Image: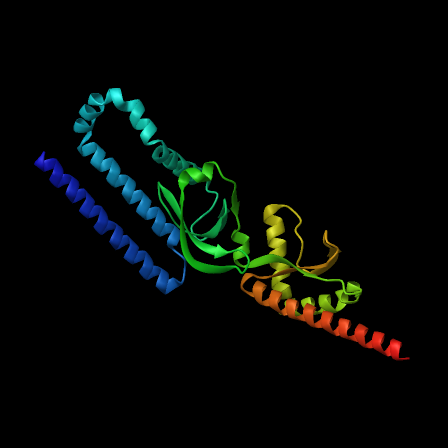
Amino acid sequence: MYLKLMITALVIILSFLLKQVIIRLLKSKASKTGVDHRHTLNTVRNIVNLLVVIAVFIVWSAELQKFAISIAAFVVAIVLVTKEIIQCFIGFIYMQSTAPFRIGDWIKIGDFTGEVSETDWAKVILLEVDINTYEYTGKSVFIPNNQFMTLPLKNLNFMRRYVNHTFSIVREANHINPFVLKQPLLDKALSYCHPFNDVAERYNALIENRLEVKISGPAPSVTITTTELGKVKVTFSVFCPTHEAFVIEQKLTNDMLQLWHDVSHANDTNTVAGKSA
């Protein structure tokens, strides 16, 4: 018994030291080459942990066999109690076999969106991303693996570099023909997207080739519609670098409100002049 305890402790200690050595080597290599080794690090951790479990199981196989026989009457109860754990392990096997995402990918699962930072047999850890601003919130989200078998999963990895950003602005009509604003706003959008237009075209083509579908972009668009309450709704769509999306949205919002104010003021001036005449 004492020998097996010593062997188990030795296996655990050696596995810990092995993980630390490999992690330091990979991190040192990553700092020199600039290559992201997080996926490799995560794989190494999972493999070493699995080997430790197998080794401990082999060492204690006789005791575990006796224990299993002694609790045969409680197998059903144990399965029911550990159902969630079993589902998480099956979910881990499912993800490893299908590879719907990798470490560093952006995904959306249920109501959560984030970057995959770590996976293991029980959970996936996400660095939460605000889908409206494409910024990290600083929060970590722990998703049990069984959720990936029951909830829809979206891989948003293409959005890490470029995104087809769509947003709308709603205003009261105020006797303004909003279509007089469409071309000036489109010109503004084109000017904001011009510095990265060539790269956006290549990236847009890359996404279309990989997905084998036609997506909107890279040219920006401005659409004018009305809401159910009869208000004017101006919708912008720009294909731009992810980190520039919110900045461009703010610029176009400012341009939209300024042009709306100028046209409204000009209409009020003309109305007053007409009455005076």
